[in-house]
Figure 1 (cartoon, rainbow, N blue to C red):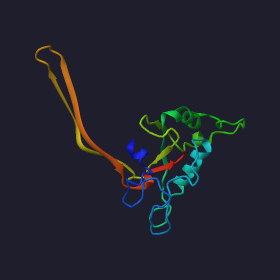
Figure 2: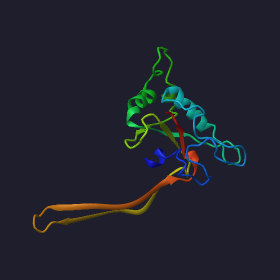
Figure 3: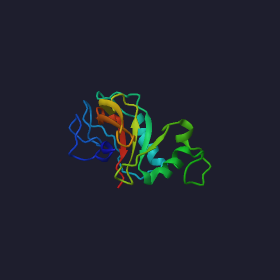
Figure 4: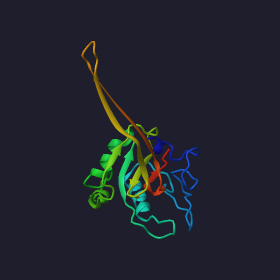
Length: 178
């Protein structure tokens, strides 16, 4: 969760010299952004706006790429709102009898609740960028088991080493809602 918690922290810069959640990612053309231009609380309109930004993404040469939303990531405080936004048959929080376009088009296929996010208002969308958010197994999980000689109690332990981060900032789009 620290990658998400530190997405706008200046002490954690990516390969392009800026934070993960930034409106100033450098490319051969103009700067590119992976944040909503106006930070918004989690809402159907906000998710739609960020999904449009994702689907309109450009590569470093300014050409359109096939980037798609993969997963909405929310803190526990927004879990029920995320369920309503993505799973309702009709539009959320309105008396209009319009369909929920996010659900009917499958724009954001699922959501995950992350219990370790430190902000109760910020939300993120992970994308299908091939080298976006990364998980590196530095040492594969090892299991060991033994029996205590005096008590015959079984003991078990697991050990692993890992590292997380990002290679391509297009792997995560976010709303820096306060």
